[in-house]
Amino acid sequence: MPGRDPNVIEIRSLVNRFGQQVLHDGLDLDVRRGEVLGVVGGSGSGKSVLLRTIIGLNRPAEGDIRVLGQSTRELDDEALRRLQARWGVLFQNGALFSSLTVAENIQAPMRERGDISAELMDELAGLKVKLVGLPIDAMVKYPSQLSGGMRKRVGLARALALDPEVLFLDEPTAGLDPIGAADFDQLIRSLQQSLGLTVVMITHDLDSLVTICDRIAVLVDRKIKVGTLDELMRDPHPWIQSYFHGPRARAAGIAAD
Amino acid sequence: MTDQPGWIKLAQGPDGAVLQAGGAWTVQHVADLDRQVASLPRERAAQALDLAEIEAIDTAGAWLLARATGQGERREVPWRNLPAEFQPLAQRVLTAGPKVVPDRPRARTLIDWVADIGEGVAAVLNDALNLIAFFGEFVLAAGRVILKPRRFRWTPLLVHIEQTGINALPIVGLISFLVGVVLAYQGAEQLRQFNAEFLTVNMVGISVLREMGILLTAIVVAGRSGSAFTAQIGTMQVSEEVDALRTMGLDPMEVLVLPRVTALVITLPILTFFADIMGLLGGGVMYSVLVDQTFGQYVGRLNDVVGAKEFWVGMAKAPVFAILIALVGCFEGLRVTGSAESVGKLTTRAVVEGIFLVIIFDALFSIMFSMLRI
Image (tube, rainbow over all chains, first blue to last red; front, side, top):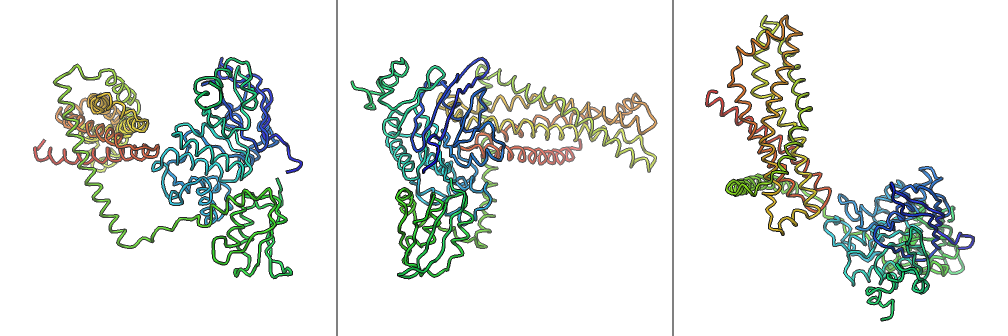
């Protein structure tokens, strides 16, 4: 749409530290509208902390974060809540409310709005269930009655409940079998294209990186390097080299044997 | 982001009535749009829905338009002129529909209510049977460990003694002291009418030693430690730690239940003894304030009128109550399945059942003691 800021998220000189440990040190990152950005990095490199910082669950020590043109640090509670309605988050294990049914889980963010009629909430929840490819009779089930893959889909439906512009995914394919993971990748891609979403996903799944990510952000040395897969393949940094040229990368068909 | 809500109206065109929609059909305005769609004329006279003026649309808005035009029904109103950038989203929503609401469950009848009562009774009886079976398993496990004492786990035992016993001393002591005060106060007030204030000592002594000391302690421990047992074992159950124990050939009964029950059997009598002392102390303090006698005279009279029998009657119940509370706590903990909610539900149950069983057994003890004339 004309006149819109091309960057959905802008992070400038972000610093995160816990006690003595510095996780992010002057980190910069831009996320462009309408792209799928994959975030990779070694265990403990602060991928999840970065995600939590962007969505406001963690207060950074220093730095500025602008999401959808608004700086999360300067907003009051009311404005932050309005901003939060414009993004959706899928946590690693779905983070579904175990005492609520699938339909109630999806309706939880809608209920918070307070002005949507019960009938319309039922319809919208059903629409979301179908959009993520679940059968409609799953709506009355409880999370403990669902398989891991279905729970992730319900989590995705809940993240989409209020038609967000940005979708944050924390390891969406972790714990899924290869077929389920590939299906989930395709689902994310097709939803992203048809609904015009911007997607930021933390992932370790090299297949996801290849098939659905437009660009990849690598967390190394407490900073971020962004590029397309081809650009990163040529990066001389040793961690990036071993990540994209390791045996698993070869198995995923990224690197040549 | 367009901040003007969308609109929809019925207009007369050259080839009949046409629905026109425009503006922002987004979730921000969904309540308003819902009302607009609902107030459209019911009969679908429109030839088409013209979407040329749509500025923004998301799944919620597209769904409302789909519903307004009866998509999937027989008299479907076709869409036209939707800007190309919104086509993929509209396609996506239209293929997901039309039926998105599951069938409502059948209405409940009187027979369902009666069946519920029956199921409830059966469930209670079943629980009672399971608890008795659990007690049987516990006795077998205890027997195995007694035959091979090296298998007993001493470290958890000491941890549980500290948690259930030593850490409970302040609250048990305070409650018993205050109940002693209240008993003496109420007793002295009433007995004064008969010039028999001195009988307050008998009343406080016997009621604290026989009933109040043990009952209060058991209730506090059921609330404190019975619930803790359920929550601990239940959380282990959720994270599959109990299954891990089983696969290593370790019996949860030996590893988890036995140390907890043993710890409570040791600590509850000690706590009861402490509660007895504090209750008598509280009664004495109040007695010497209300009645014109010293604390020393109170102790002397207590010694005359209350025998060791009263103390042992109260004390004898302690190990039995300890087994009840700890067994129910562990039993409910092992019944936890899957969710965090079930930990909470079963923890509540453990406390309620623990206190219930304590009071039932207290009544049974009273009947038994009266038949034995103790």
